[in-house]
Length: 277
Image (tube, rainbow, N blue to C red; front, side, top):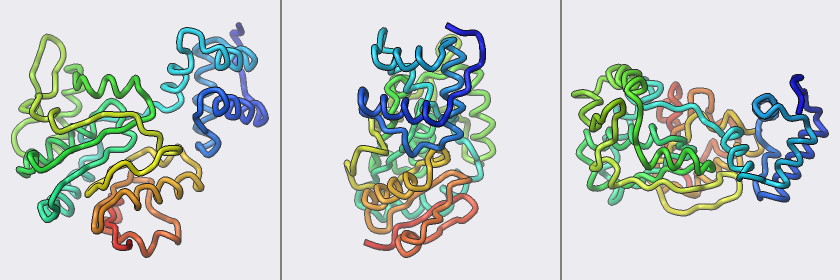
């Protein structure tokens, strides 16, 4: 063990990437290198590891070390109704068009602990579309998916989420959709019943359904351009004709090959509609 801050070299990072792919089947080659470096440094600090100790821990995988490692690498900050201006735009440009589809299947990719899934469920409930809708929440991280399925959040988080909800200019109160128990709040079963949380690897896995709306916000920023393009192709092939794609505020579609495949619905909030295929 070491108390010193360890700075990994590029060859060392590449060796860890190869080791993880060989032993665990996850490929971090096209992850944003600055982000990966920061998160690896954090892991070394938390465990007081040097490079050799981290490498050994990944191979041996004692006490399911790799699951913890994966959670640290892929953690995604999230909250209910994050970026209220996005949800106002979604409610203005997308939600009113969804009844035109026979079924409404929604995919929240990189859903983390489920806040976005339940935010979308509330929007659909307000629009009277709950019975016609089903929301899939996916993530590479099984730990956060377990939390998402529970749908239980602290009062402190709910207070923050309530402020977002109000800024979205939605009716009633966010707490209308929760059961308050002691110092926590649980998502109502009626919101949970049309949701499913499961593991999906955006890098390695394939199309698993046809969707009318896909939301993948604040996930692309962790990937290099080549991987972003690959995932965009996955989303394009997963969307039905005229289906909608929502990206984060810093994640606009900039690849020439997709300019004729998506129509910009709202450039500020990065909401797109599939027009090709």
